[in-house]
Every structure is written in structure tokens, then in C-alpha cells.
Length: 50
Ligand SMILES: [Zn+2]
Image 1 (tube, rainbow, N blue to C red):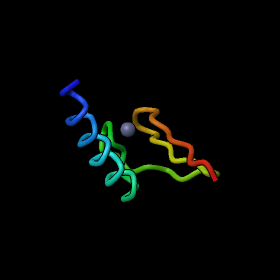
Image 2: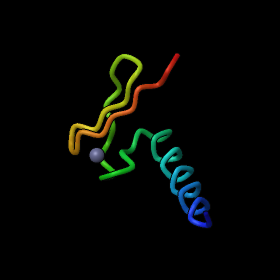
Image 3: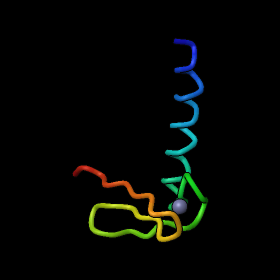
Image 4: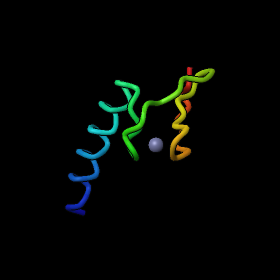
């Protein structure tokens, strides 16, 4: 399963973008809703568990 490494890297890069409120898919600015992050441009969303 040597492909796990690049997946890990992608996830890390995604996390960094998300921290900066940037959509990891289309790089648009994310909108904060109740406990969630949403991208109005592509529909990506992430809900953080409290
Ligand atoms: Zn997006």
C-alpha cells in the first residue's frame, strides 16, 4: 500500500487550506456556518465535531 503516503500528504495540505478558510477543491473562500465549513462555489463542506 505505497499509495498511502501521497494520500497523507494531500490530507495535510487540505488541512492547511481548511485552516485558512480556503476550499481544498476549488480554492474559493469557505463560509463558516454552525460548526461547519462550506464552499459556496463547489458545494464542498466539512462539519467539525465539537
Ligand atoms: Zn470549493
